[in-house]
Length: 303
Image 1: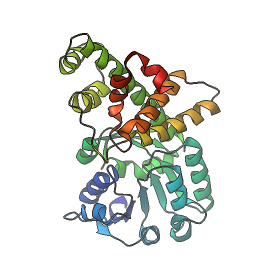
Image 2 (image 1 turned 45 degrees about the horizontal axis):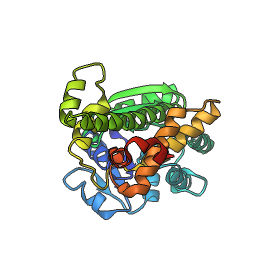
Image 3 (image 1 turned 180 degrees about the vertical axis):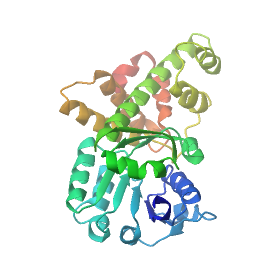
Image 4 (image 1 turned 60 degrees about the horizontal axis):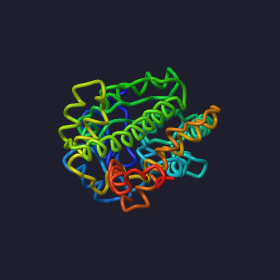
């Protein structure tokens, strides 16, 4: 039974930590947890999660292994030919990658693990850190029907919306498109906020009014009202560097589909300017500061 299976969770960062906490509190079986950062491990104190000393220890004991890692490089290191999952996991194990990776990496890793009789699903997550804490993430899953049926109940411990998007790689396709739309919208929102303020409308008033009309959006209510209006761009939130990683994955996906995504290219230039202009490591909606500093030359400066 799924309730009795041992769960392994690798990666306890901003999103992984809350996801592991919810998994540990809701899953009836054992939950083993690992992160290189000891403080991240200690944040699970008070939950049934059991800290372990290595990924190999998780791989050898878990029936289902969840990963929440930065990207392709780290997931390949864990799941590739010389990685601890390939070496230590027993046949029949299922690996669920909650990270955002390239589509090509998801399909490559899925095929390799299948050769070792290990099942794989790419299941990247969307929404905010607060949603992760509440267990209300949106999860986009790429997996066979059988694997999805096996892991769906576990995913519902951390997500309120779980969508089976297709076979392996389909979850990453949907997540990357979701992220590109968000990053593009935040840039457009930043431009309009600067224009509105210079035309005499306070940013808070502008967003409250627009939120009641057809310009309303998730980005406006969350990134706009909670970060861009109060100018709250903390460290250890989703920074321009992560945005650029995901945009690179989107551009690779677009190239493989024979499409040139011009709007995404423009957004990329803005986030590069944010990264290089003092916002490295800080929350990505700080891109509004690029537009405030450059004014009508913002597009040229981003290029």
